[in-house]
Image (cartoon, rainbow, N blue to C red; front, side, top):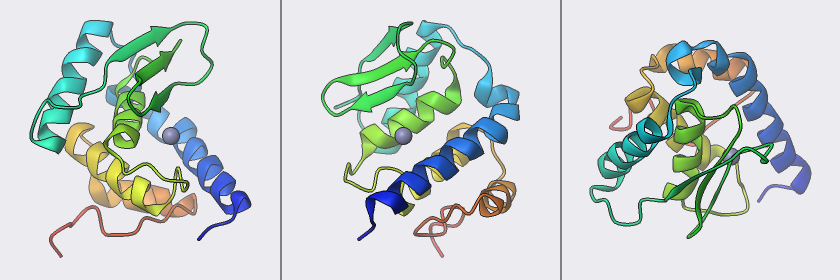
Length: 146
Ligand SMILES: [Zn+2]
């Protein structure tokens, strides 16, 4: 079990990593149109789940400051977050399992695996950069078969 302080620290580390490292990747941070995001969400969901069943609806709300995913209520995109990094992050939440360790090791493992598969990231570079931010994940996402 983790404490609320540890969970908050996990979230801070991940957000800092996204804002300083992933944001520099044009493929991940480029602002996309809504149709592109919808098509990508369906493609990624089918690859990850093996079926379109349960694929979340996407909503776009310029009044939001931070995008979020809510089980059964879709993914809500904030203004200026219409990008692949945000889509993959929120899809990783939607794919679950959802639990109190919001940005803990299980989430990071799934998120990073999806960044490699759908975000064109090099797994070794991703792992090296994340380590510098103190981010750990529960399994070796780069080599899931090992
Ligand atoms: Zn999140």
